[in-house]
Image (cartoon, rainbow, N blue to C red; front, top):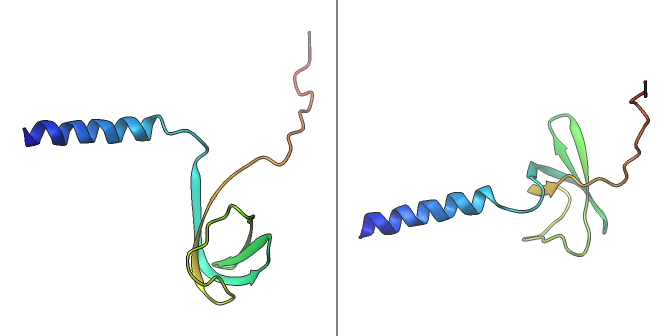
Length: 89
């Protein structure tokens, strides 16, 4: 009985992961360099990552300069311009 319940749980987990909707999420970890209402800047190695945020961005803890954070984000197109790359014969 326990084996059946465990197997059902694994199948449910795999099915949930396989059919999860929405874009892939990414993360960046490092110290905060700057905090504004609409952005947070995080140092990753020698690079500065400027990540947009809005009223729906969930923040747990005290977000301030110098704090070490992990920011989870998705990539979203701000605009798409199609170029005519295919030539007709």
